[in-house]
Length: 354
Image (cartoon, rainbow, N blue to C red; front, side, top):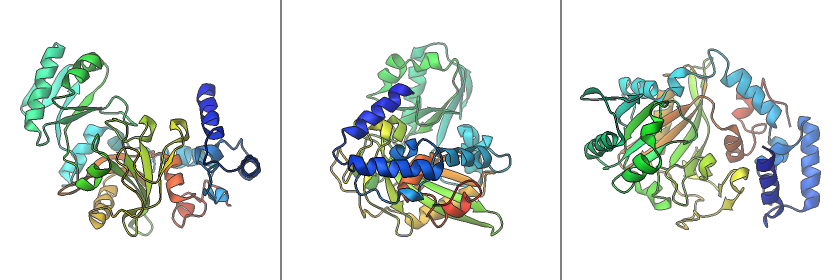
């Protein structure tokens, strides 16, 4: 942890886009007084950068963990096993006719459960043959392999003709199956809007919904779009991806792309690989996305869910639902929870005021 914080501090100090040292000291000291904690959140929210104003609107880590511990993990309102278990999650969406990635198979140890029955594999060679049969079945001639209970894009792999040997051989997925249950999903064909920014992975829109039981209404509190970069097969920020705020009224990208502080704390007007500008790019199927997440939100116990939505040529598709979505990323994208018209009400019980 100390090494990580040292790297973050070094990244901030050498950042040519940072505010003056005097401003950083003054604002971070004020944050410490407001939140009554060491103001590390001032830096993780990239508030030290020029043009990043409104630091009084951001909650610190103490308030953030109050939300996580008392709301997200609260029985009847927080963590939901049917969201966390990706196989169970997929079955619920399929049953209700919600568009989602097609599950071709799943594993339990070395037993593979596919549409044509269950069988056991005994070697990497047999696993390779099985993956090839799934690729033939997939319309995109690719599949996506991920842990049933994984998070953050860790140990997730895209498998196609070019990567099959690496996934099975170099990454030793067969050995990992001993202790990890996997989901084998059909690779999606991505919409040109997403592909033009970055074609190396499925770039997803993270949409945050809140189920207001008193009003019997699902509210979209905020959204952002995540993009892979530098050859990554996932778009997760923890794996080096970047994220861009989304204007949910206009359904368009808003402002610049950003990375987590521990990934460099970079800010991009355009995608670093393709040089395509982010700001005001209209997202296809905006109203369809809205209807999709509002319908999906009513199928689970969690009141607050972070949805990962992919864009295909035929419309939006649900990839995952997160019972404890990344709040730092959400707060950066929405400009601070304290001043936000929806978040300040959703989290009012757990956060202080500006």
